[in-house]
Length: 227
Image (cartoon, rainbow, N blue to C red):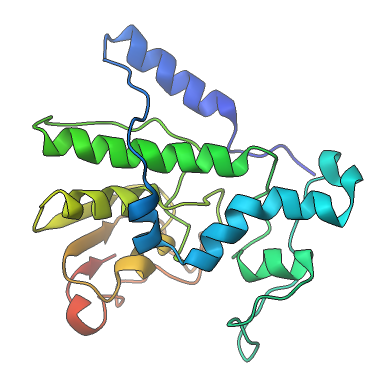
């Protein structure tokens, strides 16, 4: 095992720098659940909210043990039925085994989504720009799966919240080195959110299976996805 790259120190460094430059620091004050239910499936949200309790129900001694998926419903396997086995259930809702759950995962992820919704509310009231210093991150999380340290898709939540506030067109520009596969998949068939991602070649870089230049959207979303 190796330490997780996504660690609290990342947010602490950013927060300290923002404070030193005199920026106003706010805590989330909006509930993101309305946007979350548009971005993620209800079944996935229920699993994520209860996952740690389910893990402890398997064995109370798991309180000091980190769960990891070991099987995934790849091609030809069904993904429409949720198994009873916790490890299999974890695999159903995961795209990799590098997104470990801990006791406070849901609370941290939900707070990040709340921050995104709160930022959208501030923009709708006239703020010119808002920066969300949240962790865990979000752009690898799809409608019904976690991955790449991401559990809830904060960018997608912000986009949905902006639309709810009356914005007619919303654009997401993703400049992370890795492709935002979750964000792309959530809006791939939609024309109300433009998704543009600049990233490393997926033939050699994570997440490998999405992010090529020929992925331009589907249905009414054709032309509203750019890699």
